[in-house]
Amino acid sequence: GKPRRAGLFLATLCVSAGMGVCYFTKPVKIPNLTPEVSTTMSAMPAPAPVEDTISESIRILKVIESNGESSAVNLRENAVGILQIRPIRVEECNRILKRHEFTYADRFDVSRSVSMAEVFLSESARRWRDEYGCWPCAGRICGMWQAGGPFRGPTSKYREKIRLALVELRAAQ
Image 1 (tube, helix red, strand yellow):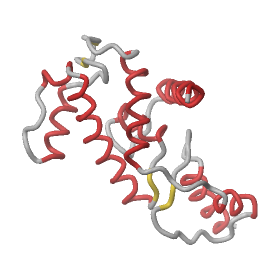
Image 2 (spheres, rainbow, N blue to C red):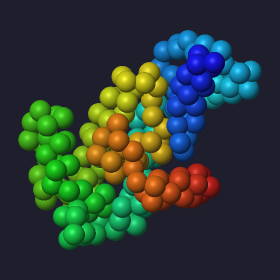
Image 3 (tube, one colour):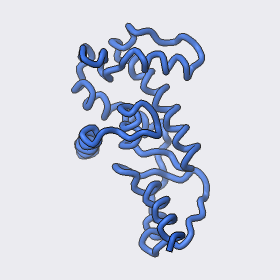
Image 4 (tube, rainbow, N blue to C red):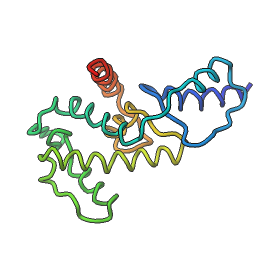
């Protein structure tokens, strides 16, 4: 019945979350789980700190967004730098920090671009955790970059780029 579907939906959301594993930050009671799902959840490895997941996401985004090229420019979208940052993202990072920390010129500086990504993705991941009770996986965090926040999904084309980059990155490790 309905409790089983609801329980399986939440388990699927926090166990697989698209392209990786999400971890509960607090105990969550999920009614009527099937034995396979209960076994999968109890056998999950200890979570990596969310900072590690964000760092992995940024490594993936550098490949997806600019193929690692710090001087990349997309005139059509007014996006520049290694992470293809638009002016609106600079403004959003300054809003999150509640101070004027970043400038448009910072988009061409790799370390400043990474700092902006850390600010934006940390805030997005925190909002996701507050809503769903689990930290998002690297694939979901990458999707947040393209979608502009935690609650809209990336396009299917971008989702496939994330999947391929994740496979490549993890194979190289």
